[in-house]
Amino acid sequence: MKTSLLLFVVMLTCCFACETSSDVKAERKGVCAPVQLTSNLDAPSSLDLFTIQSTQLSDHILTISFAYGGGCDPNHAFALYVDPSRREDSKGVYREGRIVFTTQNPCKRLDYQDFCFDLSTLTKEVPSGRLRIRGTEQEIKF
Image (tube, rainbow, N blue to C red; front, side, top):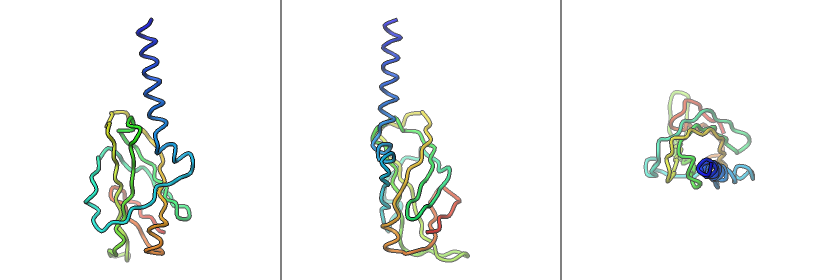
């Protein structure tokens, strides 16, 4: 009985620790991470423990739905890096972006969550255009 009670308390503690991460708290308060501008998208290190499920742009706020492992670390984080330099394809000019995921505990639990990014920094440099984020086929028109 004592072992079961102790196991129950440990499980609750782990669940609440994951649920109250700084990113989740920021999302609840409506605070979105700013876009990081960089000329070298390959420089920041990242763990490939996520997939992008969908994207949605409303005004200058980009919301991305992720499926990811590693959410047991209360300090896990997603960052959006964008190279503001022009690239061109058959559809015209676009900008390339990359999501960087960091965690100290790549647990096996799979989480699904929306994270938002404020594109204001990018739109100050580039007022409008197309953004392609590595790992997704969807283009974001801003």
